[in-house]
Image (cartoon, rainbow, N blue to C red; front, side):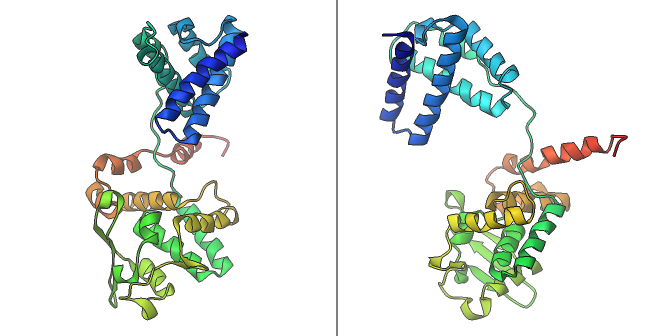
Length: 300
């Protein structure tokens, strides 16, 4: 068997082991791609074949450095490839009973540390651009959906499972009840004036108090995928880098914190089970860091 065949045999055996653990096809594909890329680098660098017994901590250190400096990959991508190598040597040690110093190998390929950034949200200017694009499109239902996501912070699945029985309205107040949130949790979210207007647009006068779904598409209840497809249509129109239901949820949380609302209140409204999740919105986003250093430039 030639060198490439020997490397392929080791990769195939590892992937077969993962497949028996019922890993998803996408996961198996990613592991294979990562290992095949490492095998090519390993062969070109050392002239050796990818066999677990041939690996040393120096190999892992050099590969990590190569990914960062030569390939210029972002830390998240490097860390994923290193995690694949961790799994590979652990499999070789535990399943194949090879005498490897797994601890030394894993220490040589420690995760790349980076300063955490806040979740991606829309700035106020981006939110206004999105609303303007929706208003120009004159699709009142789409606008109502976006306004509900921006002003309630619902997860897209929570929004799509709402019925009109989950909505209560009065002249100046409104309440939305999430009966089966993430982890089966129950919570209530007050509706501000913008959210109440969105609910009226969706047909509150005809359906309130019934079991009819809040959101309807052309073929029945609107699905999470349907909402994602809907938003994708307006991403380009509003000149946004990214637009998704979760980005709108993040924007809701960030808007509250910027308005001076406490972490506990934001966590309750968003349905977070831990304040640590909510605290992420206090971490500056990349956009905010860019804006911060731009203020120092003499060329602006």
